[in-house]
Length: 163
Image (cartoon, rainbow, N blue to C red; front, top):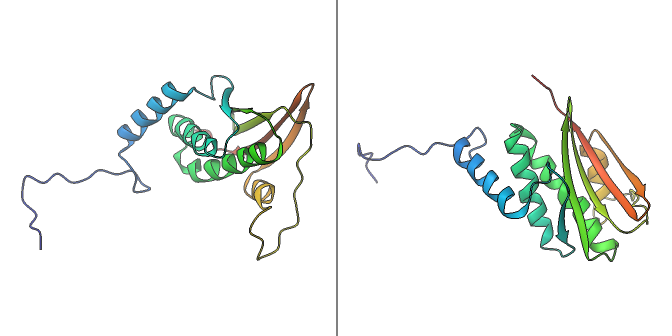
């Protein structure tokens, strides 16, 4: 059994058991510096399956910097679903990610060049795919699609309590 010597330093973690808040914030800033900040403008990403993890990392970083870490899991999941739809169903070479914060709301947008409208499919217990927009519809407070002259923006919003 390992002893608890006086030279050992306790590991600081945040409330969720993750990295200390200062380290998490530094990592968030670094990710945004490297990849772009979707809260400052649209970040363009290649339409490849691995771009979902990049989009999740960006979204998590922005949410942490906004002081809304409690929304991280939901935002990551829903971003992943919207990006997955853009990658799988639009045939686009790129898509855009943008995040906005306004009084009482966080909004996440994924823009692609297809004008084909996504739809919520009925979900059965044993289904292994087709749950993306069902999850967005279930976990977000609002969501929708805005048609653009060239493409569409699929978005979701989560309500936040402003202090």
